Length: 140
Length: 140
DNA sequence: CTTGAGCCTGTACCAGCTACAGACCCTAGA
DNA sequence: TCTAGGGTCTGTAGCTGGTACAGGCTCAAG
Image (tube, rainbow over all chains, first blue to last red; front, side, top):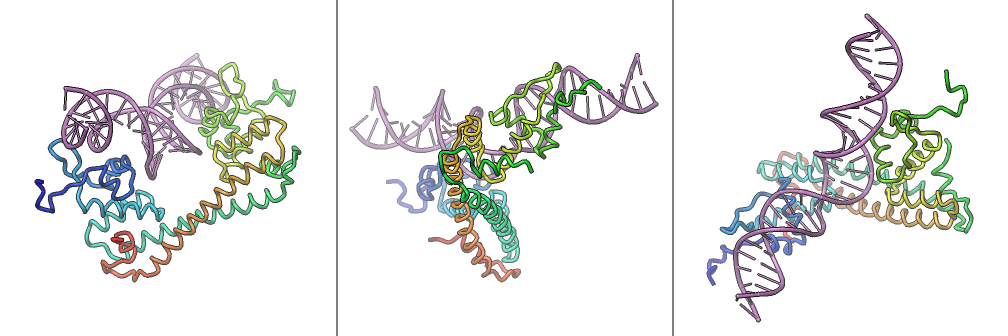
């Protein structure tokens, strides 16, 4: 029992993965592309993480869940790391992301409309005539 | 004027691209992955397309516009090429695709809800406190 | 002392393209 | 006739956001 100083405990990559639910390899990937910092290493070259890395990774994962691209995540982190980020700046990033999310929803809704109205015309029978195929082969 | 027989005219890759609006390189890509057939070649090894290739490529592009993956496109083409496809089979593919489109819409709508309600709480001011950052750093 | 688990690195793979290098080929203009 | 410019050919690399695996260390338990 050599870590009687509570603060000495380090986390290895697998620990970080388990704590956050992140895939093991993804952690290394995030380090490679520069959204996770390079952690200190043990004498045996193992990555030595601490609580701050847990927070960082959770931040990244939440942002990803909200559909932010890794580029956008980088921007958010740059603001946070700068220490002087303002609500206005963050709001700007979030709003432009929101716009692209809405654009994607609109695209998919358009697809959904076309597709569902076409499929609705299908007889579903064992016949070769099919409104879906007709729509795809249309000689407009 | 040696193609007085109207049917002799062939299309080169660039012609096909222009006629369909497809990117030049994408045509070759579609051939490589087997959704476009390998066309005959001229004596100088140029791809020689005809009207049937235009139809095929348009079919693929329409299916892609409707969000079908290239794997799904392959399935659709296999049915069509089989010559004996039935409306029921096509309907099956279209319906399962429709389900995945709807799932994506739901995902994005969930993201949109969270994001817009969070951003709505922003003051947008020059202050460091920001509800978006709070949501991302939450210590739940 | 061995065996298994964990970690390290680099690399390849997925979709769905896009783009570029380095060879050819062909046509129009000077 | 020469040349400049387009087109085409091939293979290959790049993009995003990961995932996975090989081959080599290290470490702890049995």
